[in-house]
Length: 118
Image (cartoon, rainbow, N blue to C red):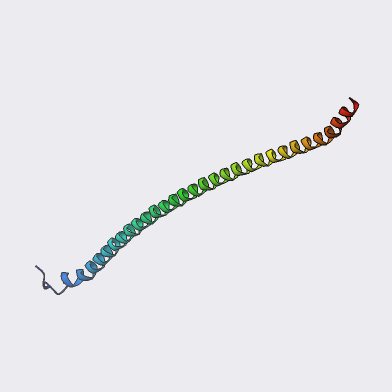
């Protein structure tokens, strides 16, 4: 047996309290950091998914605009082709009328001279 009393050399509650405080504080801090990291990762995934959805929606809108523009160009080209064809027909008709008038002028004197000759 020693002559040292129970609390003369070492008071367990008083000596262990700071160590436990540090351990618990660090453990709680680490747990909070992990929870915050998980929350941040979740928010990043959520943002990434929303961003990819917006990007695909933009791509779909772009494709729709391209299709509309292609159809407008096709309609314009078709209208231009029709207008060119109509113009060509008008030019051919004008040439035919001009040829007819030339032929009439040429043949007009021929008829009189033929009758006179006969």
